[in-house]
View 1 (cartoon, one colour):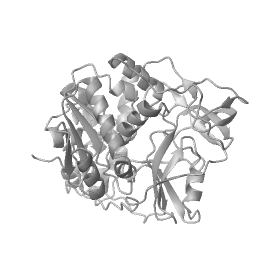
View 2 (tube, helix red, strand yellow):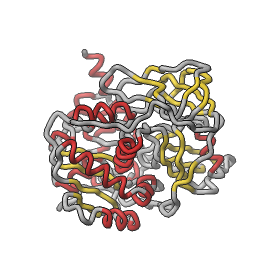
View 3 (cartoon, one colour):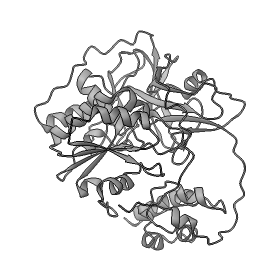
View 4 (cartoon, rainbow, N blue to C red):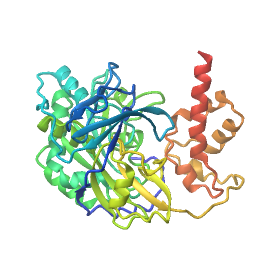
Length: 430
């Protein structure tokens, strides 16, 4: 099959053979009430209240939301305001751990007799997409159309990150059970697991675990970024195209991150909601590269201390990968549900931005064959109509264009600003 374009990156998968370690409990956790797409939760606890692991501490009556749970047992110290990585402010619950990690007495293993009860249980789990976007899992698994293909995203195409790789190596049977559970409840006949070929150990383990199930196929993928982008993955594995303004469900596909699948099965096996996150901790400022299981709400400082970070060299702190990750506002920002890596990097070589030389490399690298230089011009002119004509909304902000540009122009960053501008124009026109 013809492949979409992209770029080949140095991957630095230096923690792929490092099993998850458990991070010691921090002195406090700060749990945001917004770690998902949709409406933020409202705190349901007050200062001085005692909570246990897995106890609901935030909820919302909006369908498009996901409950928030205590990741530690201890005492609520405060309900405060927290500025998130995207600049917005939400409520957050600060808890001082008691060191006991006592599970909430009200936890039970979920049961269901039909799809509606299954989705209701997922809503209570607080589960969200753990690949970055944070779509509530009960929303993703309730598409309006019939689904005939379940696609598991295990590409993990960003440099450094190995959280999904480690999950596949350590929890293959859990992943396969989760896949079968979802296929059964949603009546999906076929599933494929897309894995980049730079994860041979994970591929071998998953392939052996799925060998006797003809409905589940492991699909090796070339390590070309952005292989893990939803629309790219769907096209490469199924040959289907998700058209502009459409969702994967519109072409009969549900895409789930492999770590999300593992969580779903663990929840239905134990009743414990989403209270911890698997992280890759890496970068040239890290003295002890590692894979960590971290309570949600743990300050990044605790992660960096455990990983022996050289704070004197530290210049950039990134949540996620270097291509599509977000800069963390500081070392005290908490670990969230959608965070899969913490990268601590020293100051990069300064590169001067020059005029476009019309080489066309950005167009060649773009998976959707957009014209980043024309989009840049349209944004500079604040021409919303032209931006729409150039299919701005198709842009995934993957960063391929910026990566290959010899003039060092911030093309992907400009597209991000252009998207915000178009949204503002549409809102103003209402």
